[in-house]
Image (spheres, rainbow, N blue to C red):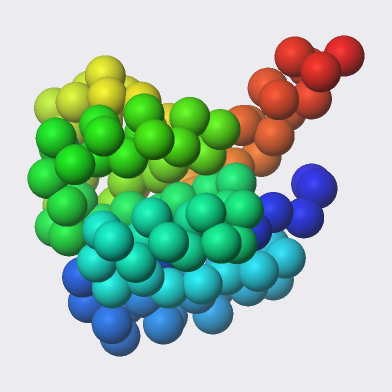
Amino acid sequence: MQPLNVVIAQEDCVRAEHLAIALHPHFRNVSIARDLEELRRNTARNRAALAVVDLELISMDELATFCKEFPGVAVVCTHRVPDESMWMQILAVGAIDCCHTLDVRVIVEAARGKARLANAKAA
């Protein structure tokens, strides 16, 4: 997979650190944002291709706005207890997946899927 920059926006700073450590081997640069404004700044500054966003940190309306502001950024949402309804809502506003907060496998696979799609469009 092509090296990507990632921003993690997580309400719990301990979980954010654990997730960053787990994602670091898979991505070029992993940064952490503590709120929506920092998520926006870090996404733009680091030219992030992936944002991992805690649904306890931002509302669904804020998520929709973020997805519109950064259309080239793949957004994977996380939650302590994700469910199908939540998954359908986040897809409707522009995110690409929803998983448990520390589900590294799903996050990496979502990024790979987004990268494959981008490569196919470029070809």
